[in-house]
Amino acid sequence: MFKIKKKADKPKRMALYNIVEDYSEFDAPGNVTVCAMTESEDLPAHSKILAESYDVPIETMTTLLTTGGTYMYPQIDGILTRGLFACRIDPAGQGPKQTWTLDLMQFAEAEQTARSRASAMIDAAWEVFRRTLPSELQAKLQQKNLGLDYRTLDRAVAKGGDIKYIDFRKDWSPHFKRLCIMPDGRLVETGGVQDFSRLHGITVAQAQMLIEQGGTLEVNDEVLACQIVNGQPAVARFSAQSYAKAKDLVSSKGLHLMDALSEVGYSDPAMMRGLARKELASKR
Image (cartoon, rainbow, N blue to C red; front, side, top):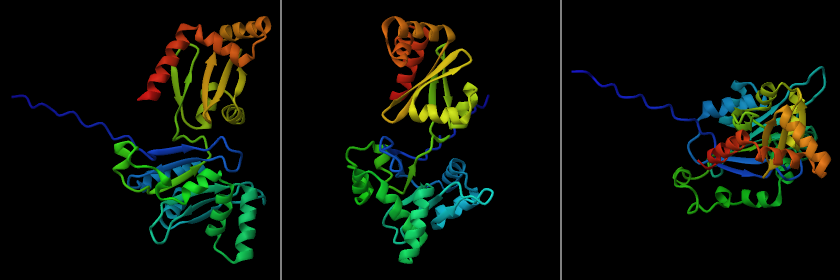
């Protein structure tokens, strides 16, 4: 008798967040994405992702996520070029763990606040950070579980119970995957800015500007086009032929280049198939 092997279960996909609220349309430095989790924290995974995202040694990140505190970035050639990373843990265990970053100006303000009030740096950093947030988010942070109505949440999210931690993120992190429609209709997934820049053969600075501000960027006779939709970048790459058609529409119809590229894309069967697959993927 043959023994039938049971197929091995597929490894469970790591989920770092199951609640995401986007406030990135607000002016800096209050432009954050609230990434929260109701399930139990996977400390090794959480530490790994945040360490990679914020360039903090993983041992240090693990300690911060365990005990709370701040990490001040080291000086480069005697000059401080970055602010700090902070993790706030409620000693009473009543509220969720919270992580965020301060830029240089906020860091300087936090240092001054800590000195003038003789308070802990983590408390000063939280006060400075909280003040910059949109008023609606400030109000939500004073409510349990961000004021969410658990009756309306997905059952898988609600069954986890209270929010365990919140990461206030500003980075285009490797954890957040993006799909780019290529000229042949393929959907190519990239993670962080470096991954995106490698795919398209552009510099990290060019990639950062494109995905933060939107617009177009010529690349080897082709063009990358990025629209910011609901605070998130939607990217497509057009062939040299499509780019030429779009420029003709700009000349003949007086269209904006982005509108002309959209018109060309909608008339391209391959790109339309890619767009349809992207919409299907977003609904899953």
